[in-house]
Image (tube, rainbow, N blue to C red; front, top):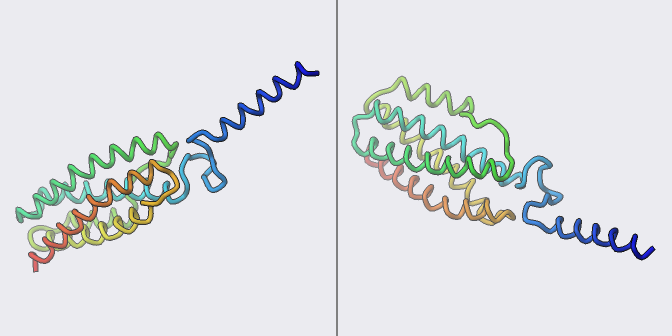
Length: 177
């Protein structure tokens, strides 16, 4: 009987230790991912927003004549490409498997931007950047205290970059009036 108790006790301890590991699934976590709803929302919305801003900024590189707008657009392409690489790794690490695409609302904005040039384009593009970065600032600020340390660290590291983008977009918008 004693020989039977030790293996059973060993299995119980092994299961207990496994349940304490970092990649556990708490009762609030989605069954398929390793982050809660807030973390999933952050990753998905940030990735989608990044794709949108890269696409819009690529348009700015060709449709704008304003050197400040062109410089800002290049910063958006560089910074969001880097952030999306990090987000891609987070998606893989946290087992988020949904497809990353630009939503219909943002695609309409991009299509609308594509039809504009010059001052009209600059004004619409910068207005879009201000609005999108305000939303992103709120999204990231909500996650700086996320239960998942990886999400928390990402939000804390990225929030100052978003705030810098927002400040720069507001500065350019003020100069366009």
